[in-house]
Image 1 (cartoon, helix red, strand yellow):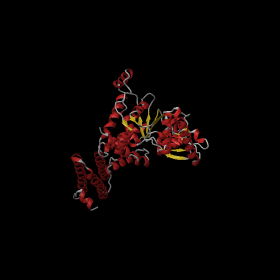
Image 2 (cartoon, rainbow, N blue to C red):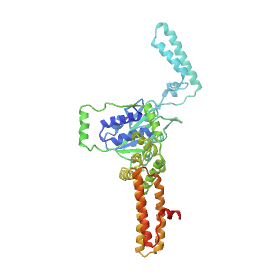
Image 3 (cartoon, rainbow, N blue to C red):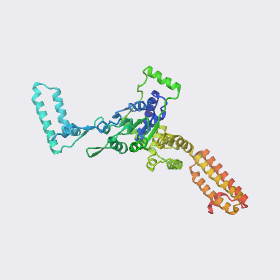
Amino acid sequence: MSLRDKMLSVIADVNAIVAEREELVEMIAIALLSRKNLFILGDPGQAKSYAINCFRSRITGARQFERLLSKQTDEEQLFGRIDLSSLIPGSLPESFFEDDDIYEAMKAELTEKVRDYSDETADEVAKLTQRLEAYKKAVAALHPSEPVVNTAGKIPESEICFLDEVFKANDGVLNSLLTALNERKYTNEGHTYPIPTISFFGASNEIPNFNDPQERILRALYDRLELKVVTKNIESRDERLRMLYNKQHSLSGQIAAAITLDELKLMQQEVADIPVPDAVNELCDDVLCELRKNGYKISDRKYLGYYPIAQARAWLRGHKEVESSDLLALKNYFWDKPSDIPLIETTLTRMCLNPMQDKVNEIRAAAKEVFDELNESEANGVDKLKAFRKFRGEMVHIYEMYTELKPKAAGDSEKTMLTELLNDLESQSRSAHEKAGYSYAPLEQIAAFK
């Protein structure tokens, strides 16, 4: 079974035990494949946490961290607390010796002797103990005592982290959380270390009111949860009854498919190797401009980080390169408020499912506009020659848009679409020439003499 098939099996397995959460489950997979963070917004009781936990329980070998945040949650609960033994002069915590081969060899020898302890081996055990302690003291003498944080089982030693009620984070832990989410780093007693976290998952039943000065500080945390999904109550009666039956007969929670952490890392590499054609980058830029034109504030940083999401969706769909339809996943990347979703989704669908048709429509609309303007000019008594010259100049520009689009046609249907577009442009140009009393010339010739 290929790596992709394994991931699809996990997705299908999770979808089988939750209801109407296909979008959320796919976004969890995309977050893990692209190393992005994911925020889930929904009312209590909509299986937000359950869906995340079901998915991450199917990744074996991954160290995981989960915490329900509250205003009382402190940094120690998330990142670990100081190992008291590191504060004792001349002492080093056990974690200091984890990569010390000499210490580990001596400890293994002592462990074996203790396991077979008897009166005959008592002296030897005592000597080995003294030898081990002497080595520890010698190493401690060469290293000044520094406070060490015990991070075992906390965020700095976890590949997958789930923070429920994420916006309950208080000011005391916010800076450390921001660094962890954004840079995958943690500062421990003045030293900054990388952390292995692949993705952070956050859930909440509300978005902070960023106009409130007390909640404005949470804006940065919200922005670092790049992918976002809104959940709803189960709408289908059949699905509700299916979930009820599974609960009554204890059919939930059985794991039928899983992947290992190493397999996930190989999947991430395959995703990163998916090519992104220039045409897709240009299309995404067109989408960006269209959304900005409609008042959506999408930063350059967000735009420049879009492609791993599209690569992950392309990989899940079995595409050899990112296709225009893979940009549909950006619906969960571009929205800032839930009210943004309908127009963003409509724009992506219109521009990405059939981008050639959208471009053709755009050119055809531009041509109609200049042709209508010519007719209105004549009706309003504008100088006919002046109006015609303006029309011809604008038609040349529209024709140039057509020539830029023509090489991008893929397949007979798109080539036919462009042929029909050119015929329409020529028809409008011919009509304008006739009305102005000029001999008709094809747009190609007019453009050549521009």
